[in-house]
Length: 387
Ligand SMILES: *Cc1c(COP(=O)(O)O)cnc(C)c1O
Image 1 (cartoon, protein in one colour):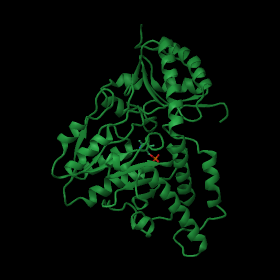
Image 2 (image 1 turned 30 degrees about the vertical axis):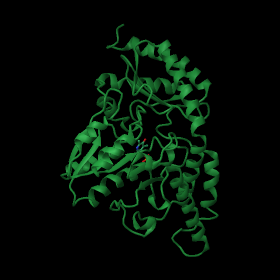
Image 3 (image 1 turned 180 degrees about the vertical axis):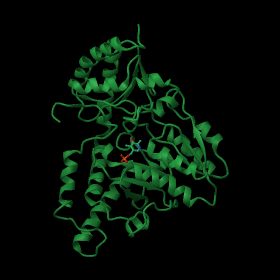
Image 4 (image 1 turned 90 degrees about the vertical axis):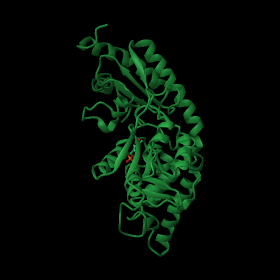
């Protein structure tokens, strides 16, 4: 859409033109099935292995520790359900934070219904997990700990390396949903001490429907998908060759530009937040003031519904989210904001803005012009705002 100001990069990102170009030959020219033995298949298999090497190299992992999946949701489901099953002899206790993405929360709740015991880790008002809480939660029958790297709603970044050290000492397998962090923050699986890590292509300018799960060599999650022998017999299904090639290239590009992109986005974001605070009274930041993703800005606007703001901003050609995109439509207050102790009515009045490569200073100026009159008009009609 021309002239549309996209400020929702945490929901998804456009495919980088360079990434698309890298993918293109793998649709029609080199369409071979990588599991076949003739040259067409071998070529496709080599492309998949090259991408695997790139992903592994970026994460500080070995290529055989990378498994391609259909995205972040599958990687998270596999980590949670697969480890619960493969570790069943050890026990059934799982530790999980309350601010996870639904793709971790729901499989964990599913296991809870099936009889697993869950310890839910709370967060402080900035959305941070306390590593000491992890230490206290560990039991002899704990089979998995899952704490996300960076939150998709408020952007808060967790002390993963510190939690990783505790997990290692306690000999508990540690999974992190790094879908929002990969391509945005420097990340090395050995330094972090994680056993499993999820990532997704479309959050770093790669295609949708392709992701990966890093699984440390000695760790074996029971497969979710049974069938062919793909992905070293751990994940059946004909490989999504163009997607995998695109993911590899996208991660390579994101890593190259990481520092530059981060600095630029953080600067624009800070200008935006200063500007909003200067123009609109009674707005409050959600999430950690500094330990947060460079492009992430989540704030609440007293007296107004997030959905009303989204619709008005859309009429002004601006795309943002309230809470998480996944809860939009269900009108439930964001579980992340509630977990941070924000009352439900204020959580409902929150906006999530996530800047990215396409964001310019002009976009920020446009927002700062469009938003204050919207907030004022909505507040005039608000039954709960009378300042
Ligand atoms: C987007 C997202 C997911 C889901 O990834 P998909 O590839 O869309 O399935 C999981 N976790 C987090 C933190 C996300 O932001």
